Length: 352
Image (tube, rainbow, N blue to C red; front, side, top):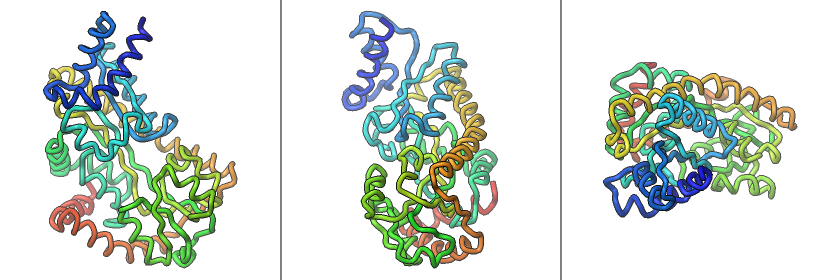
């Protein structure tokens, strides 16, 4: 019977995503599922279920974080709270999550979240030369920055529980790249509408837009020569099968945060809020060594499968940043406001 109840919960989660939240936005998803499960099965499951979504694959680093949070929350709450996980956009592509948080369709998400700050921080290497470790210190140690990030999240219907360890994005290519000159004529896959499409052009690259799900086929058919992603995404999508080189460009950092809907959070007791926050804190702390280990293992796997790993010289990276930074600052200032960008760069330059 437990399997029947669990299956019913999964189905109800999908149903709630597209109907429950619209019909009765006063209730969070975990309450709707509990009520609907009693009606549909005639039995009551005393545990409260949170719906957590993300866009990564089931064997990804993001899923590891989700599973760790699931385990920690159930243990810390003594089984009162459980988490239903929906990886790989199972509930649909939620993009930045603003709409789904604001109308109460999901409880939690791991991803960029409803934030403008987090995507800008991903460009920290170009903007201020900041590393993933420095971003982590900024989040942990700068109260003014924390307040601004929390305020922005709450304005978009979410509460930020923490920032997961960041990972550099790296380039994989069919061609060897050791300098900016080697980029001349390389066909680079970019995300449609992303500023990255403009940043590669000064080096003579031809940029071509493809969604991440299209990249493998584009590489296989020689429509593009190169792409940029984290080691985790390269492994998840088996892009190494169509690439000969991995170049540690480290131009950009991939960041993910753990968010919970403000609607869900506000209906929790202080005790439950404390338990959920503690589960998130433990997840973030334990993911730091797991992320490092995952990437080291990933590099070893790639080399075993014929990919040559090439460090990108610091001198070449500095040359690249000199050309990329003005383009990036102009774009971000136009999109988010020059004052907003200057304030964030000030936080980054303060080093936490």
